[in-house]
Length: 88
Image (cartoon, rainbow, N blue to C red; front, side, top):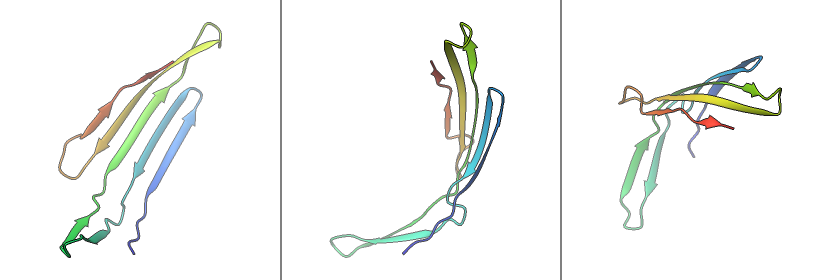
């Protein structure tokens, strides 16, 4: 049995939404035995994730776009994931 803990927070103000989360806070170890009885060990890495988005109303609330920015910081990278989707 492996236990894990994740934490996060988000804040909303008008059309702005900000969030931050830390999965694998305690960085648990997992051990798996394969079919040929080989043990494989893995330590779950802690990552830091954040996002920001802003809802922009168009046509007096009948249509909106939501630009969003996602960032993910891993233990061996500057920023391993950076996305900027645009939601209609």
